[in-house]
Image (cartoon, rainbow, N blue to C red; front, top):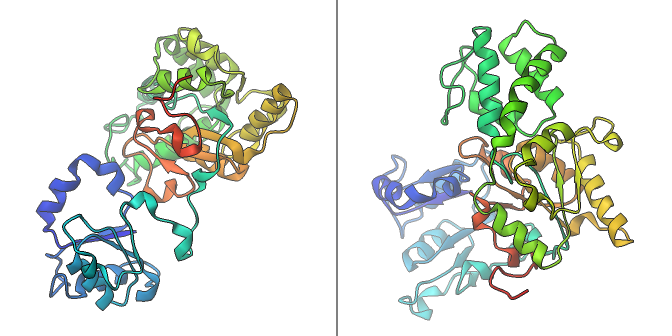
Length: 370
């Protein structure tokens, strides 16, 4: 996806400043000030330049344009592109001629009418599965702090290891990208990557022993993330079965939830990374979510279709696991940690659980009575 706008670069920056996560999903932006744009809308230049910057260099007819203004409609049409028009109330009907579709609202758009994948969250949900760390509870500060402490002991701590932004390590790699790869993995897999990345003089067993000793002291102090309690209480009150599926060990799960018993008592079951039925196949393998879904069936006296399960995740490993399991997935990535390409497999991408709308998945609204 790209943006082609008649706005100046400065105006665009102001307009999008509060929605940086949303606009990070676009591969590129072409404004009226772009060096390759000779004429702005209604000339076709902006949209032609936009199309030329996609890696696969698509034909104009393969690019779908969304517009609200007659000038934009003329521009896209002149570029040979189909247009979905979402006109403002000030636009007379005769000025929408030439659009393939005219809609009152983007929520009325049907992707499949243009050969695009349908909105997958139109499949109603009957069961919900939550990841634990950085989805329901805030634990990253404890995990990153412990990793930081170990690296510091061995003189391997890069500058700003636990800060946001695109931070480069001594080898020129991007540490935020590395953290995105590690997040959601099992303790063993994460340990292996960290030891190799920072060339620690430790075996995996030695690293994990040190890590566990330190982090287990901290985990009881974690708290629920914004929107978590409201959503769990809402689903529980309406009889929606819920489970937790986490790569963390059973021991760490108990420590993490020890101060949050009221909330976690509302889940029917938990699948941890040390569950014997997993045989070590945690995320990004699909086994964990398939096992969690199967155990709903044990409770309901019948099989639960994975596609009827909704998963909440924060990591690349979790999204890959959900996709492989055939479950729908709401991704809530930590800001600046996941590149746009990493979110493609998610059904929805939100900034926090507070943004979640249950009705998008056929569940009762927050305002509906119990």
